[in-house]
Image (cartoon, rainbow over all chains, first blue to last red; front, side, top):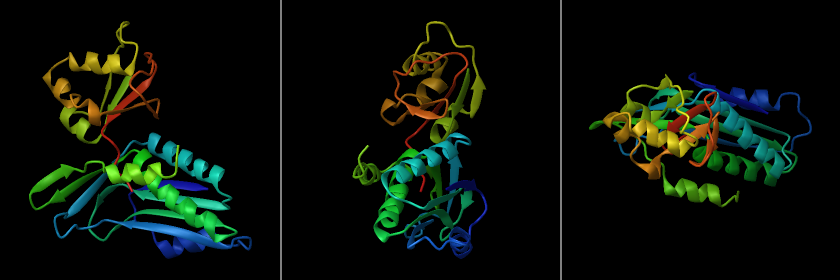
Amino acid sequence: MVVRVQAEDFDVGQEFARFTQGRTDLGGVALFAGLVRADQGSVTAMTLEHYPGMTERQLEAIEAEARARWPLDDALIVHRVGRLLPGDRIVLVMTASAHRQASLDACHFLIDWLKTKAPFWKFEEGSSGGKWVDAKETDDEAASRWGK
Amino acid sequence: MKILYFASIRARVGHGEEEIALPPDVKTVADLVGWLKSRGDTYAEALAEARTLRAALNQEHVSFDAAIKNSDEVAFFPPVTGG
């Protein structure tokens, strides 16, 4: 169970290889890789700010919650910070379990909860200047489907 | 007490971190917001929107009725937008 917050890019293939290396007990891995979206050209760059210390603690708490709810064999969350460009990888969630339902549900849960609980903030740059991104109610709704 | 500001709140306050001596009558996060706002227009404007102001106490999300003491770390920020 690993949580990383980093400025550097990550390689999904390498992360997957490391995640599963030497494991013969896993039935499958679910993964979500989030990308910076240009939004029809209105976003030219995005800067991710976080709260060092609290962010890692919150991600660990979210991961522990997922492991309490589903029979997971492993989980990984990697989230980038700093200035990113459209098309860049921003977040990676991987979950492994003996049977697919647990890893698929836990992966979905982790990305939904991460969006509403982990202290990250996006600042978007576009042709008309920069602005802090407002939180979406749809993200709260997505997270609430999993209950408290 | 250590106070941290993030994202749009940090941008409006003008700095990300400060140390204050907690006045004895400031007992909750809500009290602290009120006290900070009384320090000047910059704080009053930065912390004006209660609907979109969130707080953490010692790196845990808390509600504004949470009790605070001088050795705590308190952070203010808007709703999170990661992922």
